[in-house]
Image 1 (cartoon, rainbow, N blue to C red):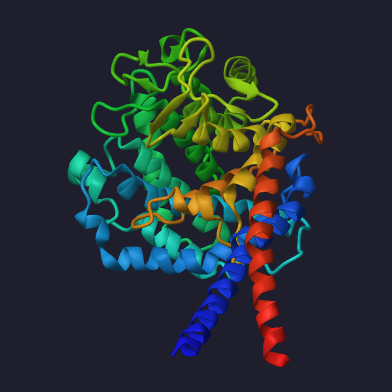
Image 2: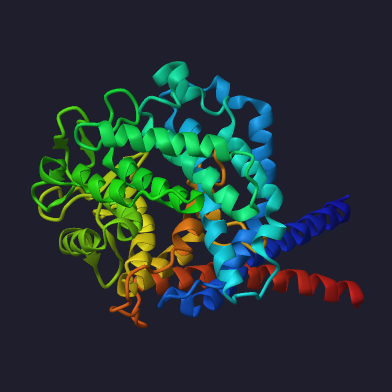
Length: 451
């Protein structure tokens, strides 16, 4: 009886140690190897597209397409209430991030980065599923609750910006004009509303105006106009009024995070998540203004430390909040915002600031925890797993695929914050600590069986 128990215990220990060894490789050693390779990609430190973004895109495309298709078919959005921000906004954001990233990947592929199959070919089902989610009226239930049945013709700028962007990307990628009439209608009506508004501002939701959504809406109109052959240059030139005077944070001359669309007054401070996101789009609209904003943003929000580097969520010396969290900013640790730095990566790349983009990109890579199957574990965990499981990964892909619109005057060098090296060390150390004793135990057991 005792011998039987010992044999069962030994077999169990062998199974457990084998599982530990496999897990150590999958969760720590494989990510270490992937990161060592990806951190050497020249696209991180200069104005090239990082080659690993094609791998990310291909890995996520099939699963993303399946999720988006199921999301529409389930009509789950009808069950959500307006206060569920991540459940309502993030699915549509995920779809548009995916489409935006696919656009750039396809453009660069056509320019010569043909190291893989055309992104449009292998991701076509995902592109079609993404746009189906974007136009799905059930998915718009939360904005209908805010604006009523006239939600496509009355302010609602956040949703309509994403709608225009998604339709534009879809038509550019596939050449399919099935949504052209809707796109023309939305571009015409939204640009008209913005032009007719007293200060160039419209609300996201009744009484809630966020300039961070107004600026990309202007960009989406310009991009759609370029596709449709409609000249919006005068509209774009006039639209700078939404980001002047009392709409700015007077402490730093950056757009206030919140504004009153009726009085034209900004209130609340400029915030990192908002400025980073606006600086992704500003260079293609107003290059001189964008250059000025980036300078002010660097002066008041950029933190370059020995251990960690990033953009603050609140201005240094004014709102020295070391720890903070909300649905927009994500975690803020030591004053540095996760969302501010993630979108700051995209802003730095677009503005040719690879002295900022390189450390931010390296930190993002190490923090992403890339698994062997292509999953970026931390972005996945920071998403809404029930309603928008791919928000984090599509957002990171979007930011990593931004291409410079400004001449690269600041090159990324090889100095990285210590947290990058510490992260690599932790992956390697934990992997070895787990895999070595487990492997030794299993090998010894197998040798005993052969003797």
